[in-house]
Length: 289
Image 1 (cartoon, helix red, strand yellow):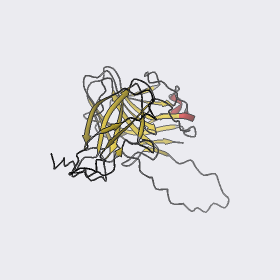
Image 2 (cartoon, rainbow, N blue to C red):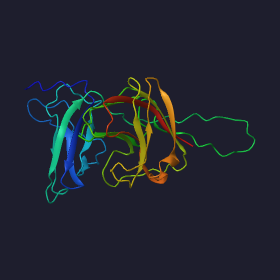
Image 3 (tube, helix red, strand yellow):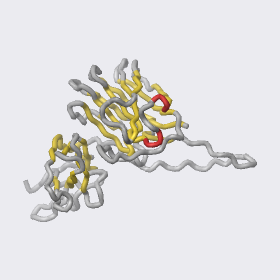
Image 4 (spheres, rainbow, N blue to C red):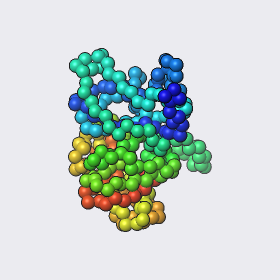
């Protein structure tokens, strides 16, 4: 196939992976085949978002979604759609890992972008006063704030039901699942050595929700860096959504299983057992003092 594949218009490669051991290191990539009569239009390999300086990521024993960003790459002649490398230095005893759902996707997950600093405000206060704590944005506007990422999963490993609508995110929870979750994390989602962020200076989680047709429900939760993935974290049910945007506020003290000085999942939306297929959208997620 000398002409390769013209994949212009695609934004990411997504796939799922797991390993027989936590911490196995593998390098996944797209592109980089520059030899031969018909070289790839991607001369340098593109690695998984969050990979280390050599392109390696750690794979755990639970299924996890990874994605390779393609925006800005020349996709006019792709001959090397997906590859992986393991090295003796990283895996002296060998490595066994599993792959599933490898696909090119036209809709990217939100990519963290810089949030411009507010302009200084001049006031006629004769003496300095303590500055008010500003809101802490998580997902405001069309992108996640710097330092945050997002994960998607269900009981059956479905990760294809979340859409970026350039200003809000819609979750079309699929039928036939026992549970589903969309979670915004400090750094990329990981199963070990989870980072935590100190948000103890804030009192309230605020966000906007709407349903696809009305009557939908979803649970909202938080997790700290030590909480296990067993569903026992405190979650607050929101029901009776409407097709119009509604603002909801949650006292952070209500999430009593999550320590605010080391939050890891700063917002999660959970569809629990018995929830039918439905669409719920969210926007303007922020922490308030």
